Each structure stands twice: as structure tokens, then as C-alpha cells.
Image (tube, rainbow, N blue to C red; front, side, top):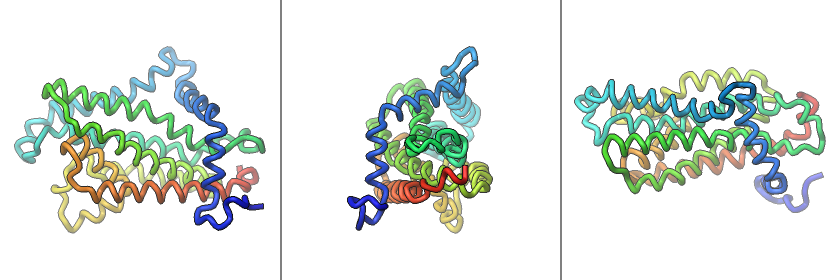
Length: 278
């Protein structure tokens, strides 16, 4: 039956999911840690690869946009700083998002043994996956800040906005992780839809280009991509030196809350049927 404490609440399941995560917080953190280490088990460098991959990706893009294309960008764009800073500010949230989207649909279906254990808290699976992306975020932002100090000898107080931008992004991704992992149990095609999004989503967000470069008639297409507002939050923190448009942050906050509430509600309602479909 329904939890009597949740009767009348507009988003049933929010309270029970939160209680499950708090109760099993040690299991959650341990599984997140193992999610990172087990991915590279049996390899010589082990979990060090979790740091090498985002570090190498960051370094390659810094070289491309900070060295190879730097002069061209300054001449044609007239931007306030080199494009490498702008690009990295948007690329970091994309790398985190891409990992969550790619792994989300199979997060529950890939753990059939755990799903069929009645006592196992399935809510932990999507959350530990999102937590496991933190090294990508931290290394990417560290690489960005290091590049700025090396190239310009100074940073910006606006970097203090990165934690807020990351919080909004991660709340959004938690909801997406819940949603994709639950729907992936019943709709196996969703992984193909996600792959399609990952293929075009990188270019339907202002990561490698400025919004001013996009014709006004085409800009609504860019904003259809929900990641765009989160990318722009990171741009304001890492490139523009502060909040230049508070509406972007407000929209990001609303998207985060809606995503989280929707994802948690879907998982709560579909969870009893997982065992029959996995």
C-alpha cells in the first residue's frame, strides 16, 4: 500500500527515496568508489585511468583551441579571452552529462542479480553512477583553472560560481539517471535514442561556438537541448567573469528540480515491476 506519510503529496516517492539513500549512504559511497575502480580492474594503472582519461581529453582540447586555433579565433571572433577557456567551460559539463546518459539506460538492467534481491535498495544504483562522474568534473575544472593561470597568470573570483553550476547540473543529472534507468527496463530502444542524442547533443549546445555566431532564427533549436542552459552557467562562471544573465541560472534551477522530481517519481512507481522485466 501507499506510504500514509506520502498521501496527498504532489510527488509521491520523494520522501521514501530520500530515506533509502540516507539509510544506505555508506553503501552508496562504497559502490560509487567501486564503480570507479572496477571499471579499470585488471589493468596495470587501475583506477588511475579515471584521472588520465579526462586529463588527456582536457589537454587535447587546450592544445587545439589554446594553441592551434588561438590566433584565428582572436582575429575572427573578437572574444574577451581565448576560446580554449570558453570551450573547456562548456566541455566539462558535457563530458559528465555524456557519461550519465550513456550508462543510464542499462544501469538497472545490467544488475539483474541485485534487482531480484527484494532487500537491495535499487535507488542506490543511479545515484552511485552519477557520483562516480565527480573525478571527470573535478579534473576538467582543475585543468581549466590551471590553464588560465599558466596562460594569463591570474584567475577570476567568478570561479566561485563553479560549485553552484555543478550543483544545478548534478541535480538535473540525478533526475535523468533515475528516469533513464527506470525506462531502460521497459523500453530497450531508449539506449539507441540516447546514443542519437550523444551524437548530436555535443553540437546542439554552445560548446565549440558562441551563441552570437548562431543566426537568431536558429537559436531556439539550441535551447531545445536542455544541456544548453547548464553549459551557459559554466560559461558565465569560467569565461564571462560572473553572472551576466540571471535568467539562465533560474531556468537551470527549474530544470534541475523538475528533472529530479520526475525521475524519483518514475522510479518509485515502476520499481515494483522491475523484477518481472529484468
